[in-house]
Amino acid sequence: METGAGWRTISPGGVVTQAGNSVLYETGSWRTLRPIIHFDACSHCMICWLFCPDSAFLTEGKLLIGVDLEHCKGCGICAVECPKQCIEMVEEMAVRGGG
View 1 (tube, one colour):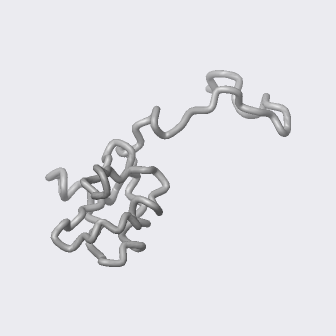
View 2 (cartoon, rainbow, N blue to C red):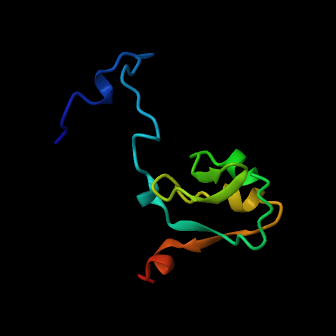
């Protein structure tokens, strides 16, 4: 049973007039892998910040200080791009204590 008008009622080339953005929606609950930053090896080059599609890296001044876990989807791009390899992708449930 469909609720609402549904996508079939939109004309081809139709426009959605009330778009949202990732700031308004917490998407971190989708994550299966969590980035863990090993700050002892981090050079604060900000490559992770640059490549993150969710703008989930937190900074203060010119330093990386953490990850916004409410918006990080766990894609792992940061870990792949990090030149120091100081970002480890860890199973979310293991970090939460459920696995």
